[in-house]
Image 1 (cartoon, rainbow, N blue to C red):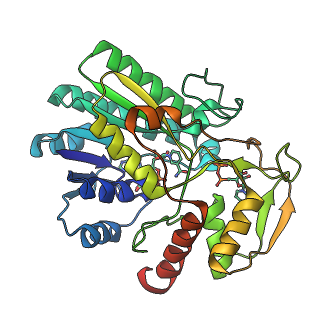
Image 2 (cartoon, protein in one colour):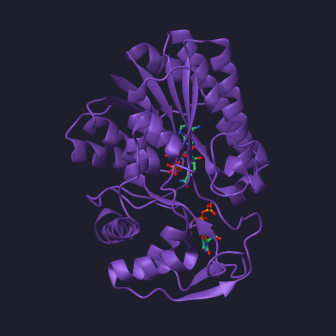
Amino acid sequence: MNILVTGGTGYIGSHTCIALIDAGYSVVVADNLSNSKRETIENIKYITGQDIPFYEIDVTDKQAVECIFRKHKLNGVIHFAGLKAVGESIKKPSTYYENNIISTLVLAKACLKFGINQFVFSSSATVYGENEVPFVETMDLLPTTNPYGETKSICERILKDIAQANPSFSVSLLRYFNPVGAHESGLIGEIPNGPPNNLMPYITQVAIGKQGKLKIFGNDYPTIDGTGIRDYVHVMDLAEGHVAALTSKREGVQIYNLGTGQGTSVLQLVRAFEESTGIKISYEMVDCRPGDIAACYADVQKARRELGWVAKRDLKTMCRDAWRFERNYDQVLK
Ligand code: NAD
Ligand code: UDP
C-alpha cells in the first residue's frame, strides 16, 4: 500500500511517515518546505532504512500534484500540508484560506480523477470552538476565533460534501488535540520558525536557554490552578492514529478525536517537564492570550471503539522526548 503524505517533512507528517513504514506501508512525500527542512527526509530514511520519493512542490499546484498521481500507484492520501500559526492567520487571512483550502480541493479532486478512495485530513480540536469539555465528535461545532480554525471547519465541510456526492470516496477527519514530543531517536521533532507559539517547544527552549522566562498566559481561568487546560498527546501516538484510520478502511466520512482524554494545566505540564528532566523552568504569569479558551480535551471513546487506537505514551515520556530532540537539534542537527 502506497500513501501520498503531503506535508511529510513537517512535524506530524514526518512522524507519521515513520509509523506508516513501521506498519508496512510505502510513502511518497510532497512538501514545499515552507515550514520544514529537506534534511528531515534524510532523517526519516535513516530511521526507517527505506528510500522515500520526495517532491518539493506546492500542493495547491494542480499540475504538480497530478504529476505525482500519474507517476506513482497510490492507495491513499494523508493531507498534512497546511499553514498552522493562529496569530499569523489573523494577519494574513487570504494566504491561509488560499493555501489550506485550495490544497485540500486540489488533492481531493486528484483522488477522484485517479480513483484513489482513501483520504485522511488533519483537522483540529479548534473546530469545536468554546464547547463544553470533553469534546465529542457528535457535538455541534461552534465558531472558531481565527482564520486558521475556519480553514479547518471549511475543509471538513468540503470533504464531507465531496464524499457524499462520491460514495466510493472515504474520508477520515482526524481532530488533533495538542501534539507534543518527538520520535525517540531524537532525530526528528518540532522545529518552530522563530520564537515558539506553542507551550511545549517554548518550555524546551527555556530549558536550553534560547528563551528567558516562560510567560504563562492567564492564571484565573476556572480550572484546577487557574491556568489553561489542554490534552497533550505524544506525536508518535498521533502518528499511529493515522495508521489506524487507514487500516480500518471504513467507508464514508469518519470523524475521530485524537487525544489522550486527559486535561493537563500549564502548571502541571511545567511540573511534569521539571520532574522528567530535572531542569527548573522559570516562569511569570501574564495576561490571557486573546482567543484562548480555558479548557480543551477529548472524549476518546470513538477512536478506541472503532479504530482500536488509544494514546499509550504518558506526559513524562512526552516531556523526555521533546527535551531529547531540543538538545539534539541544538547540538547536532542544526
Ligand atoms: P508543520 O508546519 O510542521 O507541517 C506542515 C508542512 O506542510 C510543512 O512541512 C510545510 O512546509 C508544508 N506545507 C504547507 N503548505 C504547503 C503547500 N501548499 N504545499 C506543500 N507543502 C506545504 O505542521 P504540523 O504541526 O506538522 O501540522 C500538520 C497538519 O496538522 C497541519 O494541517 C496543521 O494545521 C494540523 N494540525 C496541527 C496541530 C499542531 O498543534 N501541530 C494541531 C491540529 C492540527
Ligand atoms: N501557553 C502559555 N504560554 C506560552 C504558550 C502557551 O501559557 O508561551 C498556554 C496557552 O495559553 C494554553 C496552553 O499553554 O493554555 C497551550 O497552548 P498552545 O499554544 O501550545 O496550544 P493551543 O492553545 O493552540 O491549544
